[in-house]
Amino acid sequence: MPVRPVVIVGEPVLHRRADPVEVIDDSIRALVADMFDTMDAARGVGLAAPQIGVGLRIFTWQLGNEDGIPGRGVVLNPYLTSTRPPDGEPDPHDEAEGCLSVPGESFPLRRGERAQLTGLDLDGKEVHFEATGWFARMLQHEYDHLNGFLYVDRLGSRWARKAKKAIRAQGWGVPGGTWLPGVDRDPFGHDDVDDDDEL
Ligand code: NI
Image (cartoon, rainbow, N blue to C red; front, side, top):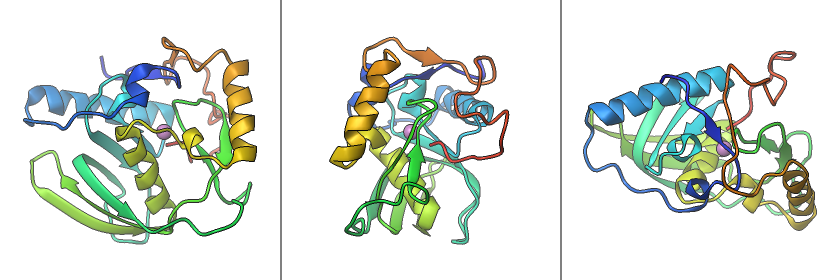
């Protein structure tokens, strides 16, 4: 089952803290392979295990950067620290964030400019790196997933109202919603334009 259904806001696994990986065995390696396949099919830049219904502390990414970090990777049991988001209103154009679990939507959100990640790779070796800009944003977004938060939970009041309305209008916010990348119509219109910024 390589590409797995992506669960949508309202599914309980997205809204609770995920559990640490205890042992890196074949089932974990198979899960990570499926996460990469699902992220690629969805043309996402990041995917957290809860987004395919698995409450474990793992996320994958596919995102270029100028910080010397591998453009494609996975981290298990991460710990992230990040700088405080700058004061002021987010720019609707330059700071708009999306999420595969809130398909087709995007809302502006301020994030810290820098982030430091430690965790384990798939061989159980410790990894550590520092990121800036969009890579730092992606890390904050995915780390939030592991703690039961979506970016829509962090929006300022004006955008939070719009997001709530959009979620209700789609019939989401309740358990059971999923979409299948590569099969269902791409909710972010990646079929039409090349614009990868969903996390
Ligand atoms: Ni997301």
